[in-house]
Length: 298
Image 1 (cartoon, rainbow, N blue to C red):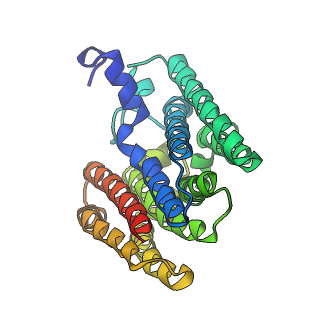
Image 2 (image 1 turned 135 degrees about the vertical axis):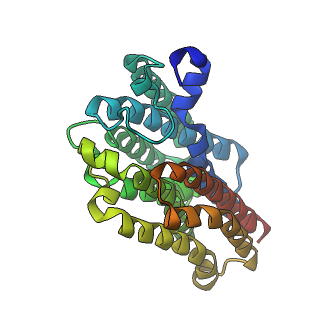
Image 3 (image 1 turned 180 degrees about the vertical axis):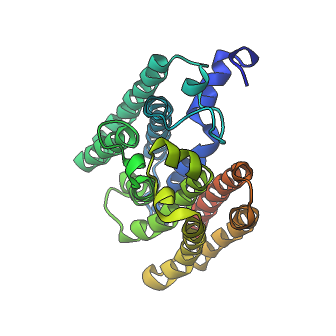
């Protein structure tokens, strides 16, 4: 793909990586359903939480696009979707400005949430933005030291679900962390597929992801374990927290991960994992929506 074949608007959409945004929308949906179950659903805080979460992820994606290119993580040999900085579709300084604009807009939504739910929201927001920048930026980027998986699990799972529930019910609910484990595990599975696909190019670039550190075989095991952990949480929540059996409707999403799972386990060419990546993202979105629905019905 060349710069002349797509418009600047299309390039910006590509840079935001919209297909990955299910990893942000899903935990907000689950957290909102949980808030409804606890009698605290609030539309405006829910929408503000969604806006803040999406903007932080977009900012992280844009910063990742810029800093991966600067550090050599994105090269001509990469197999994933086009990165706009590396491809020359958008100037690097503009991509970086876009990242900080997204973080600034997320801060605006965060100010509203802080007025609604207090100072704990400030701590969540500052930590989320700082981690989003540190994912690929700075002298010790998380993604380059095998900590990307932990980052996704914590911020796209525990923090996103618990934070979304908190800004609506205005108190911490322990079962929000249990639900957060499921969304953290499933969202991390997206990153695992990405890193499995890029294991060779990342190793050559000195990007020591967890996949590079443990190798392809154990990365496949990691993916399977994350899917299993996701599936275990709804019945575990019924046993631990008395969740309604309606939460089991979320297990219908497992049908969507069958294809990606087969690709991860059986692939011979790394490029085919792009299909597994898209399929895993769809699984995460469906699971988060159905879990939230199960909470609301319960």
